[in-house]
Length: 168
Image (cartoon, one colour):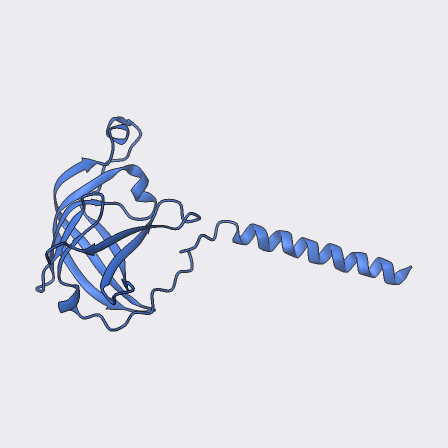
């Protein structure tokens, strides 16, 4: 019986370990450990220009490192606050596990709401007057650049995608 008791003890220990591991990884969403796209060949000249998304957002990245923003939503959990910022700022292309465009809003000119529900919500925090986004740089199947960030609940893995502005 000593062998059966030892087997049960090992089974209990293994089961306990599985419960602990499951608890530790339960909130690890798809981008929590995201290491980038692996893109390292984009140039600032290639990234500069107009970008848009289907929600009416428009961003212009100038070659001199300045930027214009129109209706840009918050990143990560800030997206759920519903504000959309417009204004001016700066941008730079950085490289780590993949290239990232860092956008900094330095002068807010307008704040809009994504929907009437968020505009009337009294518990919504004040939209920021300055803000920073980190857009991952990737390429589509036609080797064209696209920029994206994650938004909302990290367990869902929603991406906010910006593509080259039509006509750019």
